[in-house]
Length: 92
Image 1 (cartoon, rainbow, N blue to C red):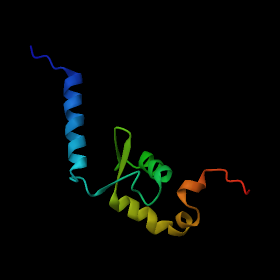
Image 2: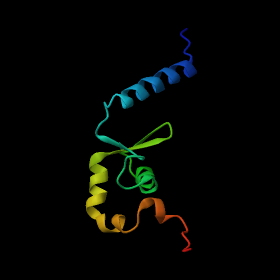
Image 3: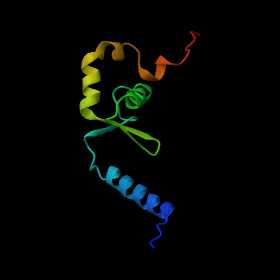
Image 4: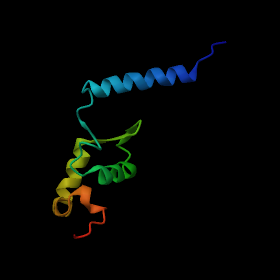
């Protein structure tokens, strides 16, 4: 009977995936921190689309998908910077 150490196997797979991502092997995927959509809109998109994936705490979306969304709604995204969109900013 063969026994498999699931924890060791999952750790080895995670390390391999992380090394591949750092090496630029997945250049057609856009990370939430590099997305022109901003992190919140990028993550919301990834949760709705099955072509996206989550690696650790990072959400990765295909460049084509992000480009599609930008082509549909570029003006809406350009109106308010993503870092100010959800903050309550009071005038001094």
